[in-house]
Length: 178
Image (cartoon, rainbow, N blue to C red; front, side, top):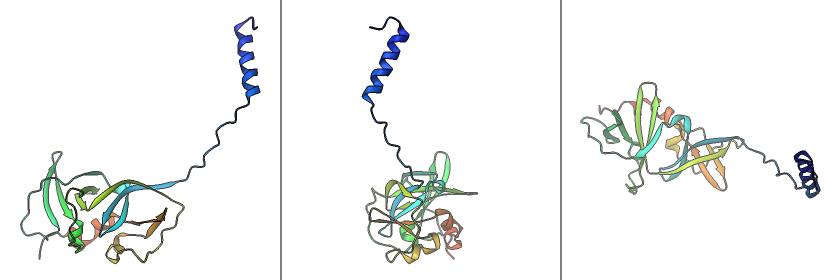
């Protein structure tokens, strides 16, 4: 029987040493690319988090005259004017998608503050950064100017999509009809 608190602590240490539990194994962490996964042109795409400011439901928009049909209009979002662009129409995809699933991905690049509407958002995607970007037979050629390729994880192909590259495209940037 220990006589002092110190002796009691020594006894506890000795008993714990006899049990000799194994320490938990150290997990090897992998660097990953984090982004937002979404559906566009019936493909799974992802955009890196540093190119998306926010995600929101499609708000009410005021129509604008003299613009291309893919310009949905302009919305007041948190006191700022947010132009809304429907990417399905921009890419000439006139398939019917569930309007309740459509979401706006807000981008901010320099003076450009805009919302791009996608067909559905899957949420956060974490893809291992050691996987190489590769071309894909199933990738959509319309997206090639805004994509560096695809990553495949667990049998699911994710095509990279850069909203910043889209914003630099003069065809997208010039929303006025000629």
